[in-house]
Image (cartoon, rainbow, N blue to C red; front, top):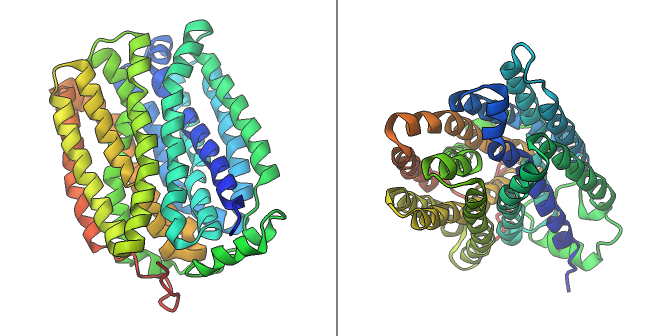
Length: 426
């Protein structure tokens, strides 16, 4: 028996990830009410959405470096506190003040800066706590939290708005974040060696499956090798499609149902959960499939080819779903597209952890930066495409991005390591 502390802790990271996406999704669900109070258009609301993602993307690499120096225990704690404070500030911006729109944009940009530590932290934690052949499942749990948080947000936020108002959404989100920060700091440790409850058997099991041991502060970063790596850039380019499509669901899907399909608040909240249920379920399933393929068919099949296949499958669902005339059918098929996308979520992060070793935070930040820049583009471009050409075209464009970005996966060799002397571990 190798012990199970690493899986108990990854469940806590699942909760942290859910909080991250409740903090992100709340503004998209409250967006129409916020826009009415501030007198801003949907396109200007898209600027507010994009500001968060630009702040988030811009600080991915610095955040990855910071995570390597401080460790995921501290950075996630500080991050949760930062996110909670900025959520409150979002609700406190007075609609009547001069330049209120630009203040909102600045607040969301700074919130994005703070949230940049979230997934470099979680992936460095996984690199330290999980052997290679379990990293698909571990990352699946982390990003299953994305679907859970995003799926919880529509009914939760809609209920809070209905009973109290949109500002209270941000206050409640902040309280949840502070509680989780306290629990994480109390329970978590950066490495198995630092945790008093980890058995020797579990430590041995983890160490036996790691390409390189991770302990202590990150050594000097080999920036040139990272920035010239085909594997890093191939993964990052593929992740552009992931970010572009995912953020249609995270930022605009609720509004698409309400305005594009004519549903009321209650119906939008209920149907709006379906893509996120699919994300959570398929993310967990995809991690298991990817690890199984790695074990039986090798890393290239289990990570690269499987990742490419999920983008292709997502594109097919998006094309069919956007064309459906019946709203329920459209939502179900589009939810299938979100689920197909998340089947491959764990592959990007598992490759970053295997390749990077102690530099996992930096490489994760670089990969994630591509996805977040694409997400920022989605937040602003989707309402433009929808208003100019219709929502169907907006989803067609997303499908095209998936098709184009599946090809970089074919160039990624998951057996390579940042330092060639490190041994691949299947």
